[in-house]
Image (tube, rainbow, N blue to C red):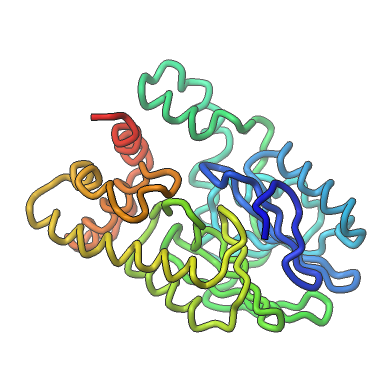
Length: 313
């Protein structure tokens, strides 16, 4: 399927809304329709982007004039900051996603964008990542319904399974599986053709999430970022994390910092994936797991490290 901005049909009543190039903040969303029943998978990073998406959906799919249910796959703002535009839609997320949602409010992102010009190389990197988005006026709307583990929903006669596989990318990552059509909305458990970033971890859980996807009868995957994919993309991501584990064990034993380790293995078969600076955060997470420290990486430290890795040594 083509990787172009906008709404794309991926099945009977199943749609993906794509935002190339899939880099920082440029996330995908989904729409599921059966008769007059509708479900949206995720909103976008700011109000203007979310409104543009909703307008395109309404124009292409009349039933989308009213969205019954919204599922937020995880807590990152590029998948939930547009929630306030969803009217009286029932909002569902995992319990851990709801707990995590308020930890980095849009107002804090707006403040960081404003302060970034005075923050040197870190501020420049932050603007490269997020300067295209408008975080003003966003009022976070939290899920009204939560679950843990699994939840079965219906959109019309179509059965959906919500499968919680976090903590991995975040603490409460959720997959949206449409068994009858062999389709999966993966949230950020799959970054297609881009380096993932492990905010929560452990990485071993993310590998287990990949393995769980590969047990499902799935042919089409709408990733959180990147083009429409197949299970081959999940196999490649699993191989990526397994490679990082293998390398990180050795580099950790040799006493290299996460930043030095990332620089040492930067030339690998995934070197052409987008956002290579995320490698340092992923290695830091594995280091923590090797040390028995399961605390998520500090976001400020993570961006400082990524800014350094993105700058030629």
